[in-house]
Length: 320
Image 1 (cartoon, rainbow, N blue to C red):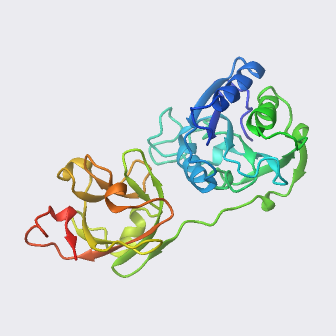
Image 2 (cartoon, rainbow, N blue to C red; image 1 turned 60 degrees about the vertical axis):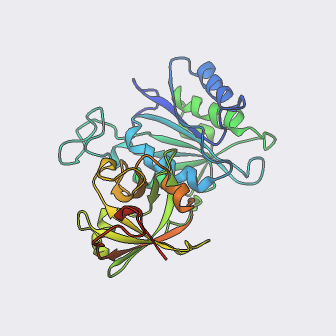
Image 3 (cartoon, one colour; image 1 turned 180 degrees about the horizontal axis):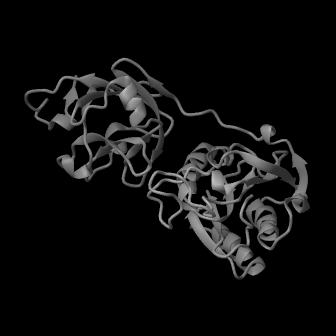
């Protein structure tokens, strides 16, 4: 059964698109502190791009395995004050896929869960617009879902709806006190990002660009192996095939670390979240390539040039 939300060490975990320029994030934190003064409040981020539910869902999915026990409040909510539902989702935190190297001893050396060690949050609270769905799936699916009763008049549901609901759960109220039970299968889902494997080619959607300009793909090392482009130190063609195409093909080098590249050279590595990522040492790969989340790029096996292409390093050459 899920760990009680008010168990020792439990926290509130916040993810929003509020930013830090206005008072919104501070008011959400202050509301939780007033209602649950003993609770920890941890910011996952308030920097999700405004209204970008899809980006928020990917970010929450990346963070969940490292959060520990507590309640997630996630708010990226362009449909606030409309007919979209406000929901509280209960999960079984012992079913979450915790990385073996996660801090706190949550998993054994073989990736199995240690007895009595919760793997993550027991509740997700937010708008039913797809924001919560990937994290709930990662947590083994919903145990129960309620539609939180609201007045429908607020345009700040983080403060006026979600925080009070989370506080009630944290203070021991049963889930049913928040509203009527709904069928978990009716929760809104977002389309999965594109990832297509083939003979010598991998096509994958860009799911995230971090502040360093690293470009995370909706692909993992298994996808590279399935496409036959996983050889260490191999060289790949990179092409962009959706939204706006690159005028040239670029060569990228498979590497294990940023330092395996020369400054300004492009590479493909496995990032801290276990995804393939296009990177550029000490520069922004996203700016260099003109890539934003939602684009699709293709990676194809290439022969290693015997010399620099166009006077550029192997990993940064332009081929016209």
